[in-house]
Image 1 (cartoon, rainbow, N blue to C red):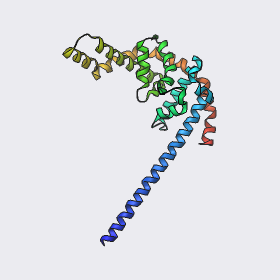
Image 2: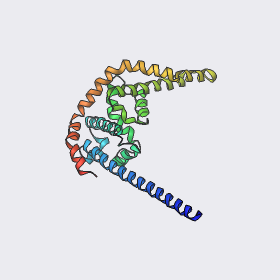
Image 3: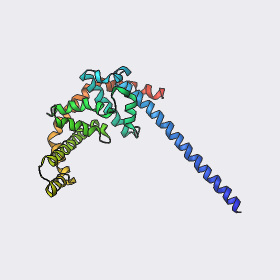
Image 4: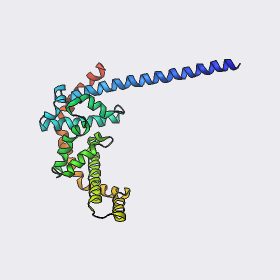
Length: 235
């Protein structure tokens, strides 16, 4: 009897193992298909692979157009559940050595720089901090989800820069430095500061978000036209 139970237990374990292996195999196959389709859409956005390889040497107008649309596409695909792991690695593979290791910042910078310049943040340490801060943020592509999200994320990065600068340049040490940093870094304080800044920046950010959108319109049209082809051709 013990032998029979042991055999049945082994059979059950083997069945569960096979099921897990099949599920993992299916997950990997689906991921490969998603990667392939996403890569094709990226090529569509950039119109050809040459523009991807020579991204850094393109005109500022083209960089802006492709940068904005790629971030918007990444945000859309993420909301559909397609882009859900190793996104930066995907981008790095697609662009290869043309963008180096800082793929996120290289692709994000042109469109973000356009909006920041539009709201009056010129070339400065603050602009560099905002671009660097947002490019390292999880879900950085959501900056261009819509103008409200862009306003919020830009406001958050400005407040973060202010908190860091104030803490470092206060000129006090010990208890007072710690107290200042904790007060400025308090969640409620930060939230209030971000909310206030959002209200002030919203109209300007949305204005230049709209201009970036218009600049990318030809890319939107191409993607809409070719979407059916992608679905039928698969990987």
